[in-house]
Length: 193
Ligand code: FMN
Image 1 (cartoon, helix red, strand yellow):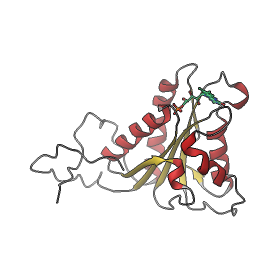
Image 2 (spheres, protein in one colour):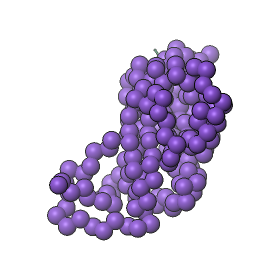
Image 3 (tube, rainbow, N blue to C red):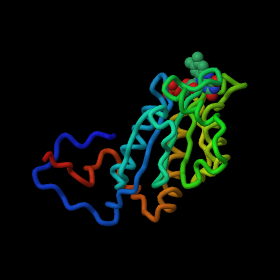
Image 4 (cartoon, rainbow, N blue to C red):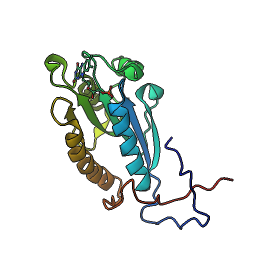
């Protein structure tokens, strides 16, 4: 889970009702060298300050347990066409003979971190994840994004994410407040009990 703020103010502010919706948002990454994990952390932070109840973790922690409530954001790299180490089991599971409606109530979006120098297997793992989820009944709330480390992965992500966030939050009946950034105070302070 994303860490609660360490410096909780003494008088916590009232949560903003409109943003205090607590819609579950699971942010999963497959990453060897940290690029996808860092972008996942950024998405998780932004979702949290916009009122989502966020969990963040590697894909392999969620084998067999994709949530049917809220949304799932997946960001994953490829290595010579194979998944990163912390996504191996997840990708293997998706390749199993799953029922056609295995993910019937799952709503998701995928962003791939890749490098087009690996032309034959460019984006192969995020593409596979997207295909398998949709093939088994999950619904992509926004088309898969591609970041190419050979050109401008970060710029591509920065274009994709706000667009995806806007569409996805509409799906959940929430207004995403684009003026809130990671630099703003959190909506809530978590008080130690
Ligand atoms: N990108 C692809 O799209 N397809 C590949 O098959 C692929 N193979 C790679 C193999 C190696 C040895 C390395 C170093 C990179 C490869 N890449 C490939 C690029 C990485 O997926 C890309 O740099 C990604 O951003 C790394 O993410 P990470 O830092 O989260 O592990």
